[in-house]
Length: 423
Image 1 (cartoon, rainbow, N blue to C red):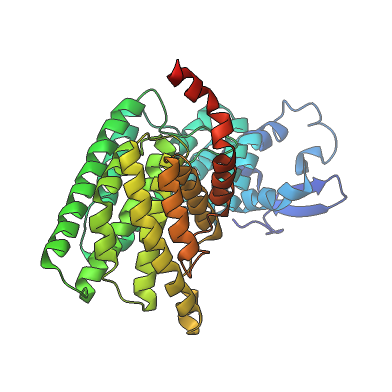
Image 2 (cartoon, rainbow, N blue to C red):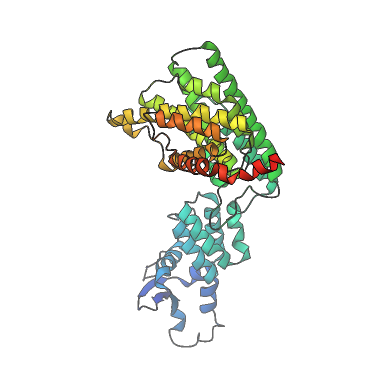
């Protein structure tokens, strides 16, 4: 038997919409009764209108216009032997809603089986989340792949991913490593709807593992830098440049993660103590575009470190703050003109660039740190800045203005100390 065969059909199904759409389908009562509870009831002798002329030979099904095609598809599926062709997740979801409403358990099971076995796109996931809960608890297992996992599994995945993200895999796995870094950063990012997944009661366990991974990364980087300083090479070879670039990318990413987890302290202390060696190695880079890009990564990491210190998140003694400024202020002054030089060379200018927000953050942090130093040290730094032909790198105008004000009123503001000392 085939749907639409008028010579053998004994019942007409009219699929109608409130908008006036009305389609007739010539069907067979035996097939309808076997597959659907709704049609079995309508075609039974117990139906209240069964004695009305022609009522048993014409069954009406009303639906919304958006569900019309799904109702037609269900009628056709009654006549199809397995396996069915579902034509995608959204189509199957529409059919599932119809068969649940009409009472077609076999087709409902087949729909669920298909939905559970195929991948979903993001938009399809949203449709499933909107639809399945309204079908009843019997169908909620379709959502199993979307349910939250237990905290132990979360910790295990996070730790393993973080270890991989801070490791040194072969070059062919670099893309996988970058993907792991992106996902870890995403999972730690709070948005408008949800709190960060990992900042939970298990945060101490996660922070312990992260601290160890970061320690291992910095140890490897430190050994790498020391080996280059020991060699006293004037120019780095390409393999060494690649290794340096990869280390810097990893450390910069680590800064992003540690900032979100409020764990910058150890990295800041390392960078402060190793500043002289790091800047020495970075100065061995050439002025071509790729090498300038690598120098900018050093500047970006330094900016993160300076911000943590300048805004009081990490406390350092005066001597270390002074050494930090004396090391990185000249380095920035040497690097930024190189960027301008690259800008004049055409296409390469698109590769080497420092985000304006990073630059502003660097300037602001440097100003803050300079203003925490004793006034004599401030004077030395500002004098060197004013003598430089690259006075814009960075712009210490704000620090200069504060220093001028403090210097002018210093005697008056601190006059009480003389009185106290004379007593």
